[in-house]
Length: 59
Image (cartoon, rainbow, N blue to C red; front, top):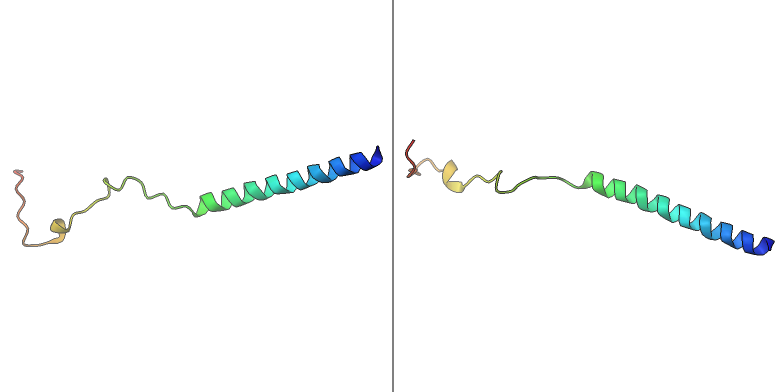
């Protein structure tokens, strides 16, 4: 009986270490992920930077 309890305790300890490692790694990876946002919202066309560009829109 004692041997079975020791095995169960070892399995539980290993599972706890694996779960803690997963949480730590997940938090680290999420903190390193860069949130850029909406690419279409941040888009600037090359013609915007060109001085010779004439816009066809009427202000």
